[in-house]
Image (cartoon, rainbow, N blue to C red; front, side, top):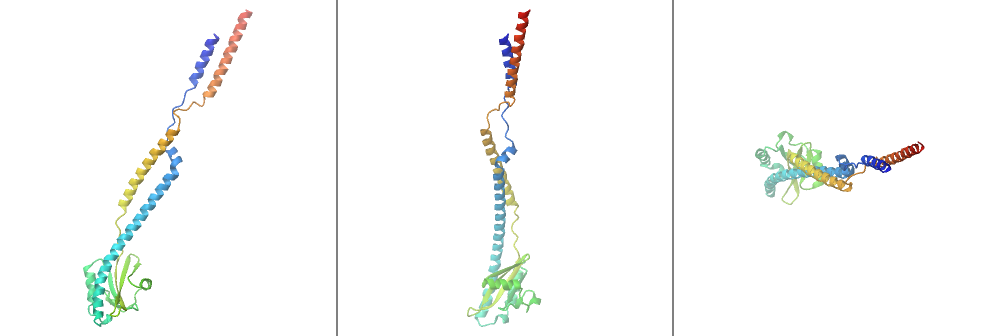
Length: 253
């Protein structure tokens, strides 16, 4: 009977010791392990997109300025050809037609002007501005550059070139004003960055998840197992005590 009681107690204890299934690796656990790295990669990708957009805008404006400079070169060469013959810049008979023809050929241009070294307008597509002084921003750009110069104001850019006389002296400047070149919409860059971000996030999640799963045991023991074992021992002692009492009563009877 003692053997049966002991076996029953062991069965009850074994019934209580049930291993828990392997724990699942959640998204929260992955973020806890690699969240800072994921945030750094995201910030780096955003910074890269911002730099690419800025470079794209600079390249677009540089191309626009290059086209303006080609137009200015044509006007400057014709005016310098007149100066090489001994004419004065202020007495040029074709400076005004050249400026107006330049605006007629390119509707994007806003204004064109020829002014003397003192900054007084000699010829201007806005005839009412002839005789006026150039803006202070242009003066600052002229002093800083010395040759080709440019000045931006609001959404406009002014590009200018010096006009040299027969002996290489600066006889004046020719300038043209145009709207700032609008860069292509950055939606393609944003879309590409979003695709790259999603791909990197997916790969990172899979790698972290696989790493965490490799570190977890195949199964975890029931934390109530030790308590179940103590309870089983208590049951065995109680059964043994009851059996001893039953024997003593039988012997007394």
